[in-house]
Image (cartoon, rainbow, N blue to C red; front, side):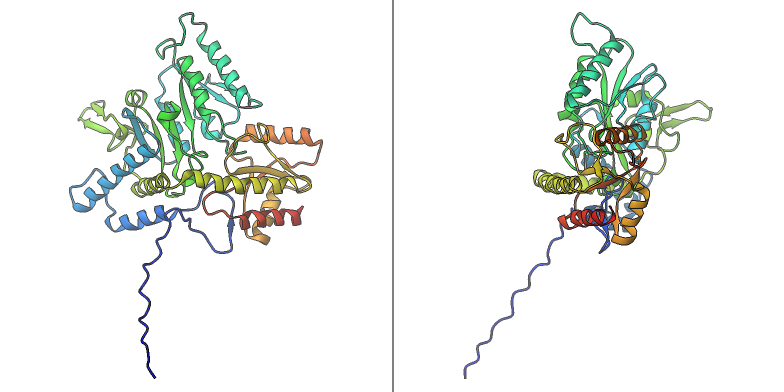
Length: 426
């Protein structure tokens, strides 16, 4: 008998992990991305690679410090590129969106009026100076444009010569979210920027909720400032960013006074020259790992097929919203019409049930994590709860809401598990 020797199969190269895979705990369904998104593999890998080299930034001549300084400044460049920063923009690392917008508030020229809408997260309501203008939540995106145009026209007064220059009258800053953290509905940022330009106003955008779901480009949108948080962008290591025009930032006192923010400190108390550029507002030892993690996720997203990711998320979002609409006693909260563009965030109430109790039962009995409360947007959330009660005619709605939010790593199984649990609880 002839025996034929079959060579063993050639070894296969190990599967390459997707840098946008998210880390999680088996069995747990995380539907609270809008608060803090899970960590992407790209962020975890970037941090693990740098940890053996971890050392000071901008403060040492040794190999470790030089490598960390290079990693930090490369991270700044990567984040700036991801967000479409212009040649003259600063990219300032902060702790989160709240920190970034507080920094901008401290940098406003004296006499600046800030115009916001009542639909903002507290991070974009509370830092601004007294005398700021808060416009009502509009019924639709077109209403936002009309309201802003009217408000800026009133602030600036008639200008028979045409579009206003930024130098005409006291400065005005429009501060608006790109996507609501309560409803996920998107605001018409580019159109609002055009209205602001027409009146010689600047515009700052809270992109914390939009950036994880869709491309955001400062130059393409023609906005002056943009803020976001790494922990909502799959890089949960405590870093955020403020990107925007240099003039106000370089003219303002440092956000924090301390080492790294100075170019000279003399013996006399007031003999201090502050640095220009991002360093002016980054005193102290920076969050190197947070910056590197954020940059790694930005790079991975820039290399990904964002259109395909968007389509997959929108299919899940539709499944979630249609499933909630089919449940008796469940009401979705919204600002605009039901077909308004939105990201993967849905807030809702279960009539006759306390939202905190429902969230606790979802966690304890079904291993599902959602958010309950007013989502750090109290004026908006309370208004939407009142409107939901008026639309439905129900008097048994709770005083707070539930929020389910999805993103990378979310599946139809996760959505269906929530819907089944809510059906059982309701």
